[in-house]
Image (tube, helix red, strand yellow):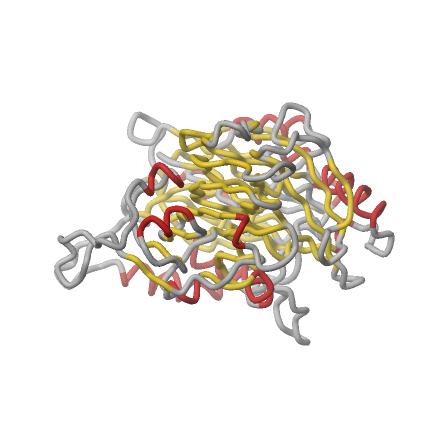
Length: 489
């Protein structure tokens, strides 16, 4: 993977960081790690080069591992030389001047690509060492090095048979980013386009607040009246924080008087915060009603030659981790008739690219319904539902944060009085168990985990029959992460 063609772009990027007075505005740069699923090679690239790889400019099989390392432009620290071997199709980095000089000699087998970035000296000002490892496959005509600031990754690579070659250079910051990340938010969309019927939300890619079996919410209420936004709006209900737990802000409702707003279904919308109050008495049909911050992801197969924008967590051989989570606060929860319930949970729709079918995964977070693992058909569309609980030792996957909150249906109050994080993780093996359960309901679903992409995700707040629930959800998010230990890939 030779990046000589990127030299001009690097030079342009460096020049762009110089002001008219000749001073650098920002001497920092970043390095992103990639792995090739075909060869098993790793490489560390600057961000402008990384975008080229993301777009297929380095050939097939390359993807980000999520690991990143902060660095500096040349001239602001210890220069790092980069070399490329056409025979082995691999890069080599060194901050050792003697090593750099030796590899620049004719016959070394390495092509010098220049001093690409600068590292810190290994001392107080740059205290994070970046380790270098070698794959020990010279005899097989396969040479590769990996550079990591994570000691756990270093140790796992050594356990796989790689040789630890010491500290290559140092930095002051390194970490892991998701390979892909999706956050449900209102963005710049106008309020009347954020709340849409669930079917409409599922039909268009992007975030929304899905309304299920509820009438439209056509009124917008501000806390303070324009144009000064100092005088309080007399139509705005008092005690909203006591109903949903969120701070006061814009409310979308169908009600008239402040008392009606407080008693009926309404939504309070921020950027990534959604305050929800669902009154099951207002359902249009059937026993269920709900509001769900959700995001629909690309679902169409690509045209010939186009990139596939769908999110396939396990299409490649790596054991990626799929995480879903949100911050939850529940202030109101009550049943207005026997047998009614209110509850909430993260939800993911997985779609089978081979057979065109879908199923749901739900993760029980709070409610009046006793928690328990569940497999069965959806009451409306018949799709399979596979469910487990935020608890120690769930039926599959791993609970990273949060525990199921059992709500007292007789108290009329909430059950999560403080903002609490809920987060759950699935690996490939976990998904295979989910899929096994889903296929017990719908045998036509593909048995291969590689066939599935994430069609949509969100957090569902729902009532069954005449019940009420008031909650605030923040940062409803789905991340696709690389394995946290390279021994799993």
